[in-house]
Image 1: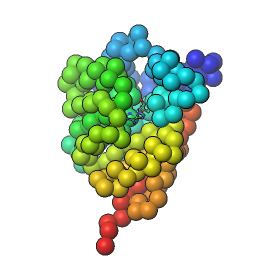
Image 2 (image 1 turned 180 degrees about the vertical axis):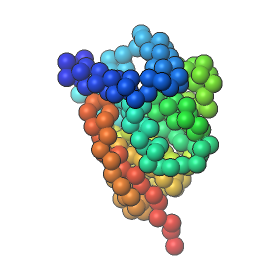
Image 3 (image 1 turned 45 degrees about the horizontal axis):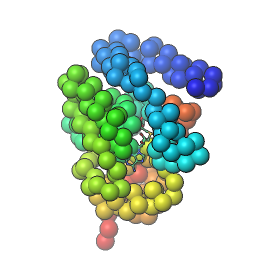
Length: 209
Ligand SMILES: C[S@@+](CC[C@H](N)C(=O)[O-])C[C@H]1O[C@@H](n2cnc3c(N)ncnc32)[C@H](O)[C@@H]1O
């Protein structure tokens, strides 16, 4: 990992340490993610499979705990609401939201992530479920809000995913992606992610006639 990325992620960790060190769930979550994913480098895995120039939507990056907490605070969902993360990676946003009392489901292409995220959820007794598969070719689980880390998604992935969201979703928080009609773009928040910052776009479907 480049030195800039290392120092950036270390500063994210320090902010979490300062703000969340007294939260037992945060300490447990950090330890569990470190333990479960110790032997797996997500970037290397994708590069080995696709090559450095054809990574496409499978590019790995992560939404830190504090960013997820900010999103939840902005959404103001009733506790027990269902949140689905489309492309859930190592499961951090789902596990964080579940620790705060939400029901979460992560859908992720790589089973090697979902198996481990699922183990963390069981060990921490969290209401988080992880399914592996391609979100373009399987039904989306029902949710009150969908999270989509779309920054690296190419146009064809976005177009196919939008069709599914148009049919099924009511609220979406997408990274660096404004969906357009029939979606109303309510607000944008620039927040830290593991590779820098992303614009989180809060969108609500305008009801049809
Ligand atoms: C940038 S990572 C974000 C991970 C997580 N959502 C987070 O914010 O920490 C995007 C994830 O989407 C997954 N992904 C990309 N295309 C997918 C697809 N068609 N079906 C399922 N997962 C996909 C990738 O494997 C990767 O783990």
